[in-house]
Length: 294
Image (tube, rainbow, N blue to C red; front, side, top):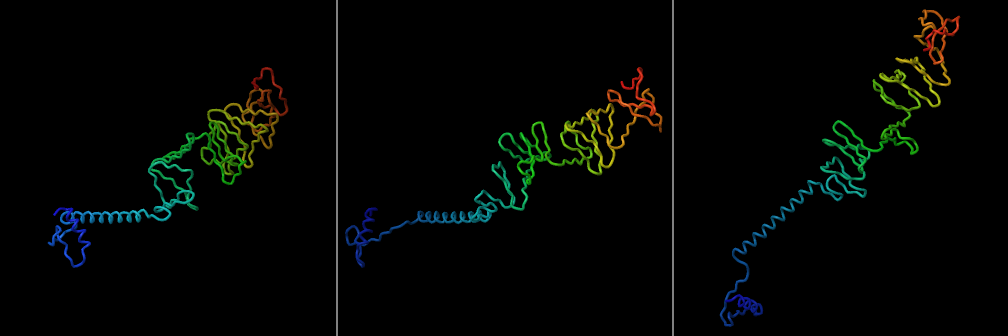
């Protein structure tokens, strides 16, 4: 029997009343008709269905495992929460590449720690860069300023660094190192030392120049003031006021002799400002041959 004949017999069998046999090939002979998938095709179909079920179970198990490991929640995966203002990370975060953000904030009451095995670099544009290396800190910028959070806008910066200039706007700059501070030029309204230390201004291989536009005051409230120079000590001013005892050593008499100890002399001054001694009962007039003022 052909395939079309089998389908025709099956369709006519659906319309046949119950209890009546379907004739085969139009005759009254009965014939059994087998409809379905049998043999290796049926086994192959069952294997495919079984394999599909196994894949679905494994996929579902892996998905649940990833959700548990990554701690996915409604707000985000694990300690990473997506909030209205950005991303909030609870705990430590490790970035393997570059990070581009507009701001990084720590939790309230906690410190912000940036850690790297080699170097931490913060770049803004092409002119400002902040680098923290293993043994160095480098800042590259046209201007570097340090301000206090309690300062108002009109007050000067605590520290300002420009191309060739450093300004300290703080009321007091304390240098506590044993060797002090070495500068080429210093502009300030006052220089003082701690109560237990001496103040020393020196130039081992040059000279020290002190200028005051409206005056210059040198004093000590506890100890003495000592002015020394390998060469000449020059003081230029319209008025010089000395309050207290003044000790000048190494002066010679007007004839070039050394003064006698425990003797009183009068102090004389040359036209070029050089000092010399004369007898207390005499005068400061010099002879023509005297070279004390040269």
